[in-house]
Image: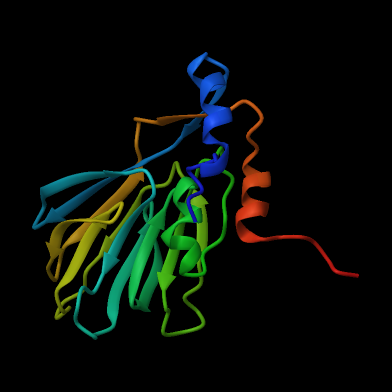
Length: 195
């Protein structure tokens, strides 16, 4: 849907000169750090502006993962994959998987199962101050870890993925009059009630 692109192509010629002249607004967006831990060691690290995804690749087996928030167990997810999204990513893959939309200025992480196999596995919004742990159970088929659409690792049984708010923010420039909710309304075609 291109929510990061607040300028439609047809207005680029008129909107670009003011931006180049320094007439723009800056919005700060949070990002996520992700670590893959295997047998107590950090195997790889990644960073995401939109989302961290655990998916099944090209096999048809259901994804089984266990999610904990902080020191407390949230539970098991049975699904085709799991998305951990930032507010910026809430209008990307997470939205298409049925996740909620979050204000870009909010400090939250969205947990969105992809095609959950039970009604109890619902999307959740948690504080970005929480540390999320996703564990891959025994006898799991091969799964993949992706950050912003790029595969960074093949997962194995016993692996643990740790996701937390990054200390590094992303700063986006947009025209001075840009309003997230106006862009959202236009891109989603929201027009209000017809009564």
